[in-house]
Length: 355
Ligand SMILES: *Cc1c(COP(=O)(O)O)cnc(C)c1O
Image (cartoon, rainbow, N blue to C red; front, top):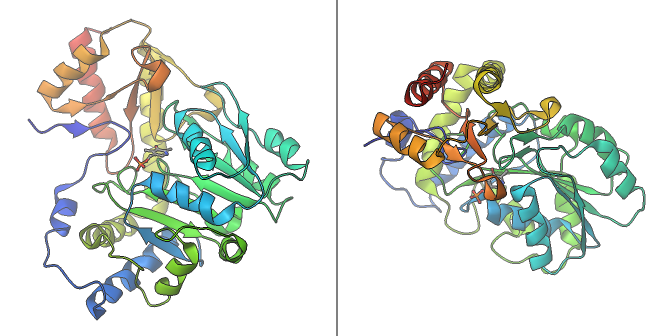
């Protein structure tokens, strides 16, 4: 049976978006493809409030996290860790043989600007990794305040994973001075997986020129060379880009401010519901606007709950990693609506006889 996805990726994909992929194939060196990339790029720049390049990689987000490290780290990287996805960035940095340190906070807590400031003041680092929205814990790090601190260190690359926030939460790339901002499209963009959107600053391109062994597939310099012709060095995910182009029209038709507000409204609704029947896992001051991590205070069998939700046409997520069974997560991102969440929470209340 069809299940509406309330999991933090892949998210629910609307029928019109699925259909937008079902158009005749075009050659990736043909004018038709360049026209497609030329059409979608300014829409993405609008979404990210930037005039700088926005690349499209045929890859899931993890590949482009690796790209950011390979292109932007020469000396030493500070990996901020507040959960499993931010820890992945540390694993990637080590796996690429780059010198790095971890700045870790307990799960449920946020990475704070003063912690980063203290580390960067040592002058050891040329890059910092931050996960904007830690999907595994339901924490949204204070990116605006972190960006203020980063302005004191203009030579340090500011690398941001916004996988589960881009297109759901306002992130002003140019104003915040971010150098790399990336997100796979299977989360707030509400597209099928396989494509990653990545804004890269001109400063990051300059830096990449100085970094040896950037690899080949994810080389920003090569990518930029082709970008100027509205192409990519290797074959792009053409069908997904067709769907992205349609989705960007729909996002801009909804209106960016309306989209940000819808995500805030959905987050507030789920947070209030969680406070009423359960408890919130994460620091109240830094709750995610796209996914809520709920403590399983009633010690229900999450798998059995999800099985019954499945019979009713929905799916939620268990706690991530060490939180499996102890928490469950409801995603409220992409094209879901407040009505969808009202329906979902009513189903859970009915199944568990909550009152
Ligand atoms: C989902 C997710 C990832 C991993 O994305 P893939 O597309 O599976 O590679 C990385 N970071 C965050 C914050 C995520 O939510």
